[in-house]
Amino acid sequence: MSTATPAPRPAPSWAAVPAPAARERLARAALLAFAVAAAADLGSLLADWHLGHVIAKPLLMPLLVAHVVARGAPRLLTAALLFGWGGDLALLFDAEAAFLIGMGSFAAGHVCYLVLFGRRRTSPLLAGGYALALVATVALLWGDLPADLRIPVAGYSLLLTAMALRSSALGLRAGAGGALFLLSDTLIATGVAEWPQLPRPDFWIMATYLAAQYLLATGVTNRNAGVR
Image (cartoon, rainbow, N blue to C red):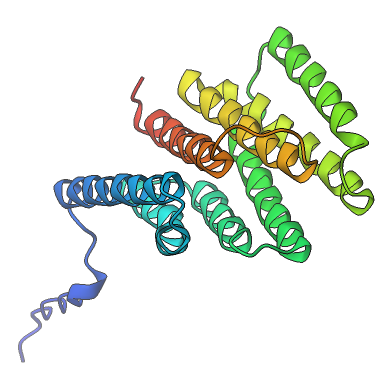
């Protein structure tokens, strides 16, 4: 009787792990698609074409997720971006309940970022600057915000500012992303408070937000890959 060990069965094709070169091609394709969708979304906002914005906006974070996953992103980064996607979808609806849901989804994303950034040291001077900006912004906005949004906006602002500060521990790229996220959401808050706005305020909000998420995501993946 033969005692030869039978050859192992090959794994199904769907279970195969892409080779590094294939993963890099996927990452580049997803990033290109993200850039195209971002251009379409921002162009729609500039042209005041609401339908184009509604079509393009939901594509943005899933494409960025595809890019970072192909580059071996940690799960917390994927979760942060997907919570951002949930916030994006909620803010497509012009209602206070949708605003609160969107703010909650973004807040969950900031918690993911904070856990991901860990306890790396940040500049005390930068921390003081962010603290001053937080107190000044909330104090200035407070009286102009709807009464039922004051506490939620203040709590969210604290969490967002902490994320922006902690992002700087990963380097200039991620730190710039955190700062732009803070700027983007401050522009939203000034709109809710009915302060005077820049022309096409939605364009500036989305432009700073997309840059923020891209810089945060690539700041994390570059650091994990050892890229400076």
